[in-house]
Structures are given as structure tokens and as C-alpha cells.
Length: 136
Image 1 (cartoon, one colour):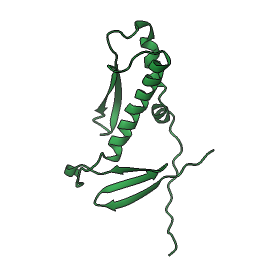
Image 2 (cartoon, rainbow, N blue to C red; image 1 turned 45 degrees about the vertical axis):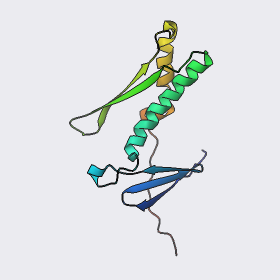
Image 3 (tube, rainbow, N blue to C red; image 1 turned 180 degrees about the vertical axis):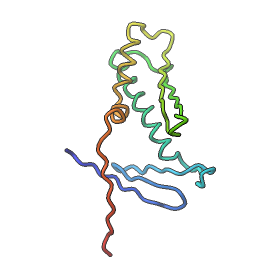
Image 4 (cartoon, rainbow, N blue to C red; image 1 turned 90 degrees about the vertical axis):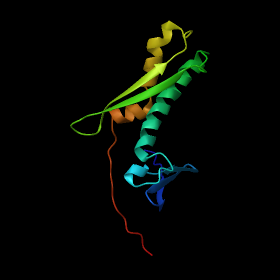
């Protein structure tokens, strides 16, 4: 199994940054949670990654068939489970232009459904968390 590494640091306040593949991903908590609201929260980024991943699969599907995507877009919606207080349902609506070929409607849904972020949620990996104290 190929291992990938990401370095996560704490630049101040409730901000957390990830350095991955040469990109710095910044997060913060909203002001009502004690942060400064300078960036999306980590959980918001998780939801955005789900939406953009599904969007990528819709885009790839349409590009392969030379279907224009300028007027297409996705909307994700979440519903909390009142018992667990966690998200109990995530809906993804694919909005397609009026001239989208009807024959591809089910196929474009299937394309979005193959998003790797969604598949990871459906088949979660094993998590291992450990603490290491670095030597001086």
C-alpha cells in the first residue's frame, strides 16, 4: 500500500493548516465557536470535498460525451440526525440544463455516485492514531 504524508500545524488561535503535495490548506473555526472565521472549518472542507468530488465525476462524464457543463451545477444538502447530532443524510442534487440529453440522466447520477470521497465513507478505512514525543 502506498503511503502518503501530510503535515498538520497550528499557526495560532484555532487555525489548523495542512501541508500536502506542496499546497497549504488553511482552516479555522467560526467566530461563534471561538475562532476568527478566516477559513472554512475542517468539517466544512470535508463536505466541500464530497461535493467537488461528485462534481468532478459529473464533469468527466459530460466532457467524455461532449456535453456542455456551463449551466450545470451541483447542490449538496445535509440533515442532522436529532439523536446523534451528527449528519444523518447528505443529498446531492445535480442540476442539468434544459438541453441535457434525457437518455444520460440515470448515467450521470451513477457517475456522481462513484465519487471516491463518497465511496470512502461507504467503506471506511481503518484509523490508527498514536502520539510520539519528538526528541530535542
